[in-house]
Structures are given as C-alpha cells and as structure tokens.
Image 1: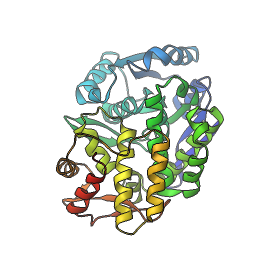
Image 2: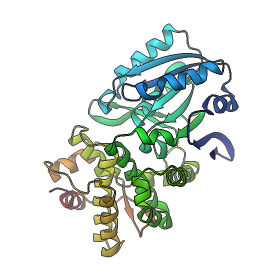
Image 3: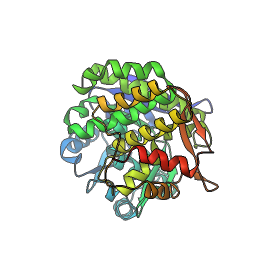
Image 4: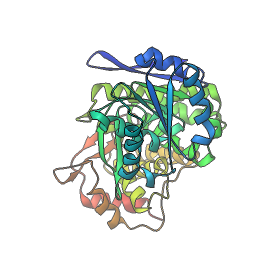
Length: 361
C-alpha cells in the first residue's frame, strides 16, 4: 500500500491510500478515527452493481452500521435535487454529526457526496473511494466539492476535506475504454504544469498505461496525487497557485457545457490543453516543437485535440460565465515551458477567440 499524507499548516488532515483492492478499506476508516460510526455509502447506477455489495460487506463485517444511497449515473444528475434526496435519506435515518458519508464512484459521486457532507448538519465527515482513473488523480483530492447549477458546472460548492481517500487500482480493470482514457487528460496536465520528467515518463510508458498494468498505474497515480497534494497544501482554498490545476479547464469547461456534457471531462480538458498550449506557443512562451509534442502526446492516448459543431464566439461567451472569472477577466493558465504553468490575467478576448478557433474543425 502506498500512503500519501496531506497536510494543512503543517498538520496532517488526511491520508491518500493507493492499493490493489478494497480489503483494507474498513481498517483504514478505523485508523482514521471512524470506528463504530454509521456510514451511508453513496454511489451511482454504474458503480453500485460492481462494488457496492463488496464495500458494504467489508464495513458490516468490521462492525459498521451501513446504509446506501444510489442515484442515476451521469453529470446531469450532479445537481441540488439529488443532494436533497440524499439529505432526506440521512434525516429519515437520523444521521448525526459523528456519522460518515462514503463516496463510492467517479468524480460525479465524489463531488456530490462531498458537497452533501459539507452542508449536512453544517458539516460531517466523508471518505472518498474513487473508482475511475480521473477521480483517483483529481477530484478525490483537495477538498473541492460541488454540484452543477442548471447548465453551470460546479457553480455551487464548498471546500470540505475528506477524512480519507482510498483508491484501488483493481477498479480500473472494469472501466470502459473511453472512461479509462479520459483520466489521462488530467494526468498529462499534471506533468505539463509541474513536472517535465513525469510528462516524459507518460510518453515512455503509454503502452503499459493503455494495457492497465497495475504496477505502472500505481506509480503514475501516486505521482499525480503527489503533484496535486503539493499544490493543494500550498493553497488549500485556491487563492494563488492552486489555480494552476485549471490548465486546460477554461476552454475545456466551456466545451463541456456547449456539448451538453456529451464529451467527458477529461476529453474536454484535453481539448482545452490543446488550445492553451497553442496560445502559449503564439505568445512565445513555449516552442513550436514543444507545442506539437503536447498535441502528439494527447493524441497518443486517443484523447481529442479538437471538437466539431461549435463556434468560437460561443466558447468565448461561455468562458465569461465560468467561476474562474475575476473582475470580469478570465484567469487563464498558460505554459512557460513544459512543467511550468503560470497564471495570466491579461489574455484578451481576441486571443481566446483565436485559441478557440484552433480547436474547432
């Protein structure tokens, strides 16, 4: 088992455990101070048939009282109506502040469960058990929770740290190919923003990644979690460098919304990274060779670098409604060399239009 400890102001706040199965999950919850409490395992209709019984039985065998809540799968269900349904189940079962939610699933499950935990009884503990590659390296770490408001992604949310993150690479074997590969969008991002050597390793190991080799994936997930841990520890509430994690997300979120969430998040991030890398190249911040290398690397994982059927003007307009806008200006993340992302506040509408045009075919 690989353990990564997350701190806040020098104090340990939770651990990320990376392992090959769920066998140590109940013990890990107990070690994190949650022995004997009641649990509500929250999952979706895709994940529940695969893992809900196994995880429930593990907790029950360890003496936990277990309840479950399953909602329909899909980004369109990450909304306040589903959160209210979860609140109602918790109220009817007399959940108290000492009880715990368990998010068993991908990013949608983790975001929704975390938001419910942050707001129910003004905050209860929760455990992240991410089952997708994307959620294991991204949404399960850092305490950002939220739900979509109408068509606005993650517009309602809270910072609420988990008490434990427990990732089993065994779950990667059951993912559909497209869902598996979308996780590489965020992983490639980590190399681009913080660690060129890691980015180069992803290029070297892509065959092992695509065949889902457990040892390779444990190593890669561990490095991505370390990168996100380092950024989150330095900026837990996204006041400064944590914004670097939004590389590819400004245009990516706009594409995600305009495509009515028919493209997956990691795919939209890949498209957004292509646009941001092009803009970095046009500004003279990276070489043309590096820009082309980034495009080739994204493509090597069968991730998109372009979209069809959208208009640059709509992408620009949609970026203006993103939560990353400050004082009317889009906070854009660009590359000052591979492995070194920077926050830019001076990207013009004309530049966004041009970058959007590069990813429209």
